[in-house]
Image 1 (cartoon, rainbow, N blue to C red):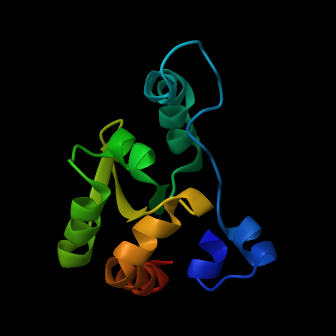
Image 2: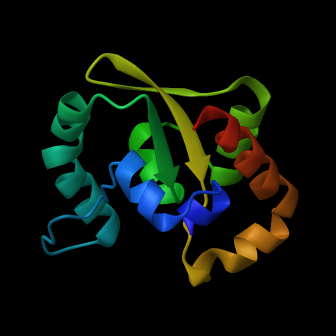
Length: 127
């Protein structure tokens, strides 16, 4: 769905993007703790190896890992207002916060249609 939002066909997106998700391990306990524990083990190292020009977060949990904020809606507004950078390992990256592309978040996108649309428009300019 992200490729569709950015107007890429899937084959082109796979050749252009490095995809990584937050939970590559599954310790017991709360899912939010799982993301913190698992992400901390590999995302910083992956960013150092890949050295991306742009980081796209999908969903509030991914955005919380990279940024300190109260809600995805407020974070998207910050991105649309001034652009956004995230810093990992003292390296700064241009960042785009998107809602998670799952069906579970369809209501958020409907309720925030203008924010989602404007994020897609801005993101297409950056990619």
